[in-house]
Image (cartoon, rainbow, N blue to C red; front, top):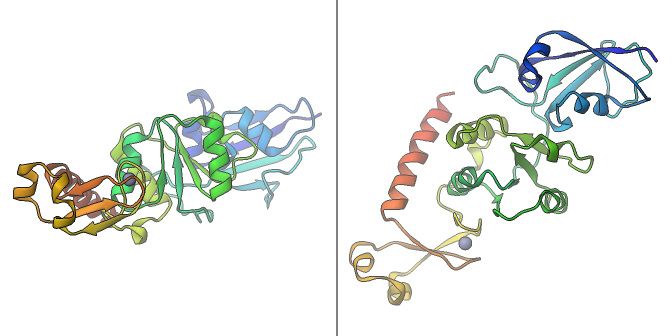
Length: 248
Ligand SMILES: [Zn+2]
């Protein structure tokens, strides 16, 4: 069977080994296989792929290859450090489940009011099953999870710094309209409700009772929040983040 030629565009090149970037590559077809198989064998999860052109015509990524085709592969997402290409973002759920390495990102997303499931004990199987069952997009730094057939919506987080990760997610999923600051529990993703001080007075230490008047309760895990030092620091972080996001 004849080999195919394949060209990756935009940031997809960054997911390839250095010596393969920015070139037309030869794809070996040992057996009859799909475009998805070929792309993933080269290290790129199918969830990162937007439009696929075969001989100049749009094709589904599941299309089978016969040999000899010319394939052009475009990214599904924007490279926030080099946003030159206009991309039509795929319709993906704006509800998320994060892998075990993204705890800080999860906290930031919850603070901004984005529906974000995260536990540090989730297995890959649990993440994939929960995403399917609840219609969530998987956010991960692990390409392996995203290569699974049953993964419908996923995003490979590019940065290893949590603030930049947050920026990637907000730009690629257009989350600014969904922001509801401090509406979710940072510990469990539950929704926060304001409670009267007198209802919670017996739970407070004397200094908290003396200095704070506004209190919020998580409706899922019962955690109590008030606008203390942690809250203030998170608020400064969020305010700065939103200013930078709106300026982009
Ligand atoms: Zn909670």
